[in-house]
Every structure is written in structure tokens, then in C-alpha cells.
Image (cartoon, rainbow, N blue to C red; front, side):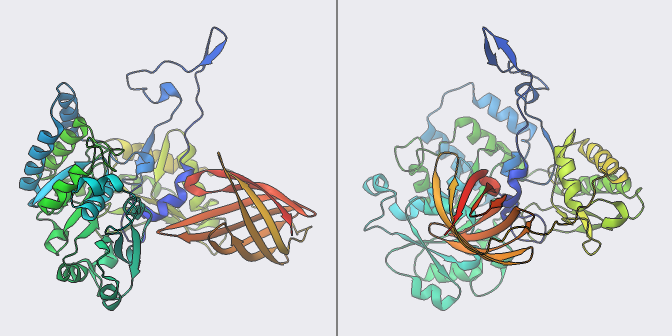
Length: 527
């Protein structure tokens, strides 16, 4: 899941914390054949998804993998269809496509990958092995090989797991002096995720590239959801390699990506990937994705980007005009800070008590309504006069007519919000202060955690310790109902735990929301 890199709105990182809200609808239209329940047959038409019980979404959120990125351009669909009718030799195909991508992007060479994460993994494997078959066969065992990747601390993120999966260790640095001290014969490369932070400072992409070049170390930029600037912005700043998602702003295949940069390393990255029998074999890209991705890049250089911006503004204007018929609703625009999800975001704001509904309630109703509308975030988590509400609309991936659907849905909710009473918290009737041993049961595994509570009336504070990491917790006790949350940082990812349950004497049990990772059951006993 790629997010908008940096900025205040919904980001690629923030999206992961809310992705569990996008759940598949329950399978419907079940039939019975010979006493066995079977799903209705797949309909190869306009009701393709509905025929298996999945409800499509109107995308007012942006290019996020959890809601399937973007919609491919017509010429991309056509290229993929035509590519499927012939056999070709993949090495010959990738050599020809690499040359054509070089001509289009002005990079030394190019490669189509199975998504941006695959591009990161293949690039790292190339920097570790140099194309040596013996070394490639050893991955992810990097014993005796180049086994470290230097990364500015600000650039750590969920997606650098694709780098770490090759077996390397991430060496975090904050300053140029720390960068210099981290360089060793074990250093395979430097990795930076593009963001506004990466534009300035002593470890900006340009400055880090200069430091890396001094030591002959390749530098890889993860620019997944960014626009493809030609000549390439990051390569011009000194980066060796840059990776992009194919199914984001380029509107190529969702299961495709690009790796651009130094010819020898990009060609090595291809050798480190499928169909070759190496570490990257699991990340196979097909001829259809290769040609679809090339068609997307061909289209990118001829698309009327100014006209697209005007179209996005028109979508925002249409939705705002409908929403502002509701007294008290105002509009503003958030302009992009970087090249990811580079489009104007419409912000619709109102006083929570005046309309009788909060921004988060509107977001939930839109997502779970008919039709379903996914928006780019909200503010106002409860009906508190001190908390103003808003919702954000990202027109980046909206299709013709989507603005009418979104406008009508938003207007209906704001003019007739559900009459949900605001309930005050009941006083606690249990005390949970102390240490609790908790067993968490996941889909197919389990773990032992420790919960330490300090209770002040209805308020809970304390610590949540997992098997290897821990973090502070905060929550409430209402009657015998216990609710608390914690966040824990591991590698480039912040894990989120939201516990809800009941406490009876020395036993506490309930469920744990794990954000994008689903749910777990828990039962805890007082130590």
C-alpha cells in the first residue's frame, strides 16, 4: 500500500492504520447444488464483483493498494490484451523494454517489476550480489556478503521490509557524520524514501547521494506513488536507482512497477528476478504487465496533465457546491506538498453540534453506504463542541460521474444525519490496576503479552509489552467494559493495538483490533 509521501492529509503510512475499515462485503446470492452451498457463477459483465458478493468502491481517497490503486488507462488494457496472445522470450523482452524505458524516461536503463516493493527487493539483491549466481543462491543468507543498508532515520517506513527481506540489516543514521561512520565493507547500498523531508537537510537525497558516491555505494530512492518527472528528478539529484509503483499515478497495471537508473545495476536486478531461479523468483512479472507498464509510460509522456488538474478541480467544485447547500458547511483546498497523489484535496468543514454529526461518522457512513464511497480521511471523532469536523475528498483517481455519486451521498448524510444519541460514560465498577498476563490468539497463532495498568477513576494509563517490543497504553473503564490502545514501533512499522473487552474479578477478555492485520481474541489474568 502506497501512500502519499509526506504531507498532512491521508498519507501512505496513515492509511495502513485505517485499512481495516475497508472490509469485503459478505458473500451473497448463494445457491444450493446437490445439498452443497455454492457461490453464484462469476458474471463477466458490469456486475463482475457483485456476482461474487463484493461491492465496488467509488474512489475519493487516492492511489492506495488496499482499494486497488488506480484504474488502468484504455491503452494499457489494450496492450495487456494484445500481449496475452503471443509467447516471447522474457530476457529478450526485458532487454527491449529496458532500452525503450531508457529512451522515454532519460534514465540509463529501465525494468518492469512486480510492483514497487519488488523493485526495492530486486535492486537490493543486485547491490548485494552483483549478479554472481553463487551469491544469488545464498540469499537471504548474507553471511560474508555485503549485508547492511544505510538509511536516514526519517526515511524508515513499512515498505523497507522489501529491502530487509533480502537479509540485510538497516543501519539508521541522523547526521552526515553518522553516515560516514556507518560506511563499511559490509555496506550494500543506501535507501531513502522520497518525501518532503528528503528534499532538505544534511541527509537529503542530494546530500546523501554525494556522500554515497564518495564511497562508491549505490543509493536507491523509493518514489512509489510519485509522478514520473522527466528527466528523472531523483537521478538528476545523484541517486543511482529509483523505484515507482506502476498502478498509481502512471495508471499502469496494479501488479507492476518500475526500476530506473544505472544500466548495469538495473540489468543485474533483472537477473535477480523471475523467471531466473533466484531469491526474486517469487516476485514474477508477466508479459502482460510488462507491456501494459510500457504502454502506461508511453502514455505518461503524452498525457495532458494540466487538463487532468482542471478536471480534478471541477470534481471538487461539483461536490463542494452540493455540500455547501447545507447551512454551516464550508470548503477549502489542500494543495499537495510533494509528487505523491499530486492533486488538490477538497476539505469540507462544519461545526459538529450544529449538524449533529462528526467527520468520522460521515466517513464511516460513506464507506458502508450504498453506493460505497471511500474518502481521504476525516476529523472529529466524536460529537464534541470543541472538536470541529471535516471530511477530505481526493479527486486523483475519480472516474467520470464519480463526483455526482459522491456529491449526492455526502449531501444526503449531512442533511439527514442518523439520530444517534451521545451517551455519557458510565462510572467504572471494576478496578484493573496492576499487572495482567494476556494471551492473544491470532488467525493461526498466539502470543503472550503483559499489560500494566494504572487506573484513575475511569481513565487508564500504563504499558503494553509484547514478546519483543512495548509501548504506552491509554484507555477507559466504563462499568465493566475496558477499552485501551497502544502503539509499538518495530523496524519501519508502527503496530496498533485496540483492546475492547470486559473485566470480571481477575479475568479480562475480549478482542483486539490490529488495524490492517485484522483482529485477535485475548484473555488476561491478573498476575
